[in-house]
Amino acid sequence: MNLFINGRFLDENKTGVYRFSWETIKAIDALLKNKKYRNRYDVFLLCSHEAMLPDTLDYINLKRIAFKGNFVEQFLYPIYTQNDILINLGNTAPICKKRQAVVIHDTHIKDMPQMYTKKFVRLWTKVYQIFSKRRTLIFVPSCYTGIRLNQEYGIQKDRIVVLGEGYEHILRHNPDYTILRKHKLMRKNYLLVVGGTKNKNFELILNLLKKHENSIPKVVIAGDVDINVFPEINKFNTELLGRVTDEELVALYREAFAFLFPSIIEGFGIPPLEAMALSCPVICSNATSLPEVCQDAALYCNPYDVDSLYQSIVLLKDETTRRNMIKKGTQRIRCFSWEKTAVNLLDNLGKV
Image 1 (cartoon, one colour):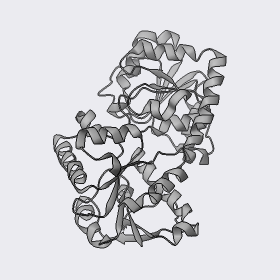
Image 2 (spheres, helix red, strand yellow; image 1 turned 90 degrees about the vertical axis):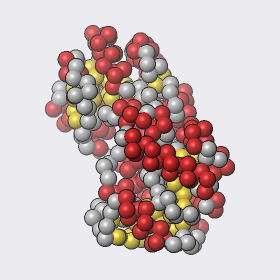
Image 3 (cartoon, one colour; image 1 turned 180 degrees about the vertical axis):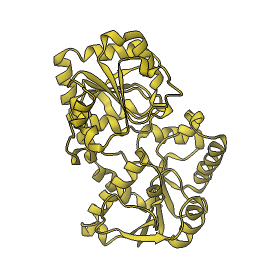
Image 4 (spheres, helix red, strand yellow; image 1 turned 135 degrees about the vertical axis):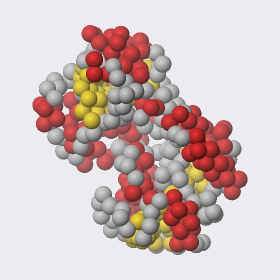
């Protein structure tokens, strides 16, 4: 049987969805070494002629198309795949394709619609409703996301499969400690924050600085921050690094006092697993999917309560607590891997 993978994500920004999609493809490629899977599927990656692959693939065949964008996905991909199965890893999928599976990473368009244009929200709300009526197979990263899709779009529980996500990608990179020297960061004496989208809750970080700046370590922010939204951020004891390399990120995780992830909503949340894999204690919000993913391997805060976040930081000043959280993080990540994600995906395609 031919199995096609939608590679549209390769033409887009390298977000968490990009990370998930490529790591899952790499894990599928590795599984195809096993005759159990290789004899079952001939796998093709559909992508544009301009698409740049981050790495080589041994068993997945490339099928390049001259064009890219929404038109190609909606109208050409169904033609190329005909009666074969199409896997869509990045939230979007062709509406007119019947035999397909779609990974829906979150319900942000419902829970935080201000992140998107009204047109985008209306369009994909309608698309997800269509998927529900057609009983399209839906893959999700967490039970939380599956429950929300059932509640908001009526997607039946028997058509939802939880995949999980992985963390091993972060271990492939050697730490680049020059970023610490460049910004004069003292080891174990800064709080690390990653990412700048609205759901990451920078407002809570700003309020933490306003109220407790003198009793917490410096806050180091890796990734884009919209200074127009948070014009006050530079007034405090912060270091805005902008985008960093994977090697620099590894160094920042390894030497941070703690990793802060006070998101308002998350469909899964890869960064806490990355931090745990690099022995960095995690403080995250007690909202949406994060307690499911992190369980007892993180300290929690109310994403709307700055004192709740502060108290978790204070707890980590106790060295016994700190060592215990690092140990729990090391144990927790064993529940996840990109290989497990790929196995869950391939073994459930019989439901398509």
